[in-house]
Image 1 (cartoon, rainbow, N blue to C red):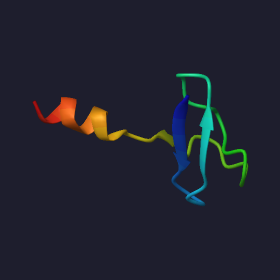
Image 2 (cartoon, helix red, strand yellow; image 1 turned 90 degrees about the horizontal axis):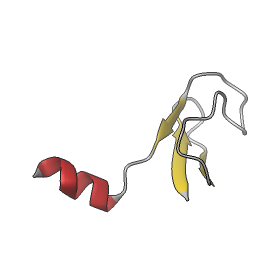
Image 3 (tube, rainbow, N blue to C red; image 1 turned 45 degrees about the vertical axis):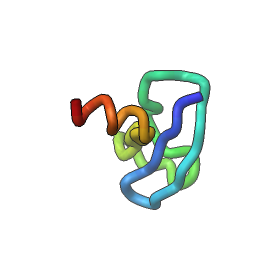
Length: 47
C-alpha cells in the first residue's frame, strides 16, 4: 500500500499502486498529489 496526500486540500489516501494518481480523488485537482514518505524512507534518505 502506498500513501498519498493532496497539496491543495490535504486529503490523505492509500492505493495499491506506486505511480502518482493524476488527480486528487477528493477535490479533483490535477497534478497536486504527492507520495507520502514513511519513517523508513526518511531514515534511508538520511544515511
